[in-house]
Length: 309
Image 1 (cartoon, one colour):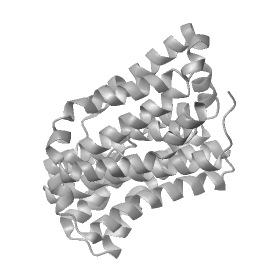
Image 2 (spheres, helix red, strand yellow; image 1 turned 45 degrees about the vertical axis):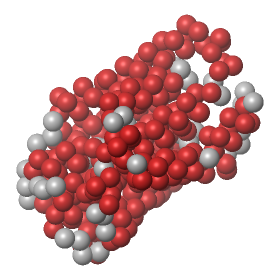
Image 3 (cartoon, one colour; image 1 turned 120 degrees about the vertical axis):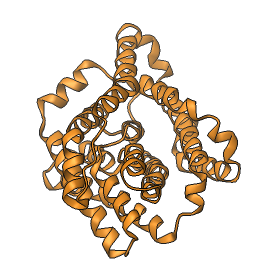
Image 4 (cartoon, helix red, strand yellow; image 1 turned 30 degrees about the vertical axis):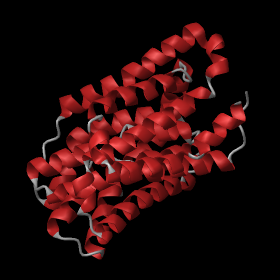
């Protein structure tokens, strides 16, 4: 049973691609499920909490080095990489601005799920997402001014409330249930990743349904820029971990956390302060980083030994 569930989970990229194709061909039914994104993410975070304990987070804060390293790469290299790609590929100014915005925002909550599925350090990922969200309140406007010469206020209260509702509260609830019913839940733990895969596949389909028109007008050059930005961020995160001799589990976590941005925030800021065209990179990034993240998680699960029962 456990092996069959693991095989289904390993095919995560295939399910994501099938959902993407279905949502692109018939976007309306998927777009109608927009209200399900937050509950689905909350469900996944609750499932993650069922596998975590307070000791996992205490261990993270006892070694703050990886957190600082992740923040440095996140806000130091991602904006530069976005700007370099925009210039190298000669993107139009609105698209270049949207690329830089994606590079200047914090890590996205989807990174926590992908880290869990890739058998990374989930507690570290959640902590890094929270820290980058707090730092983004000052870092995103400053970096946007530095690279685009325009002030972009970040909705700090909304962002922190979103992290609280979507990530922290469900995770804490899961941890509380785990503390009370941990032994009874042990037999069901192999099912948790499968539920998470199903939820993320649904979210990917909904995102494509909502952004169908944007995807249809996307140029190959922009697709290339977004893909290289995400993959370059993952590579930089992993390389930074290796450079500072972090354990493999931390390197995987850094790769995912740095490469997966809060693209929804980038889209919101682009529409409000730049133009609809500037929102295209963020919309495309929100689709691509879930696909690349799912592929990375599946690859890690194939190459790593089976976890102990």
